[in-house]
Length: 76
Image (cartoon, rainbow, N blue to C red):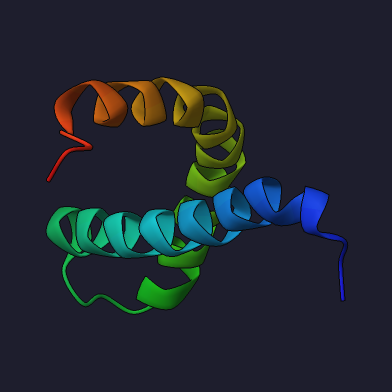
């Protein structure tokens, strides 16, 4: 088990991995269809996307939290 201090980074790693997997799969399918080697194309696209998505999630998450805090009424 990891210490609690790693929770935000682990959350970002898992979220960025799942979202980039889904989005790259859809984009690869739309670009190529179900061709021979689709899984290899998708895997390459996913790993590239994940390498970008993970640091972006870590940088953007605090901004998203602030935006949510401004849009949510704590009195309800």
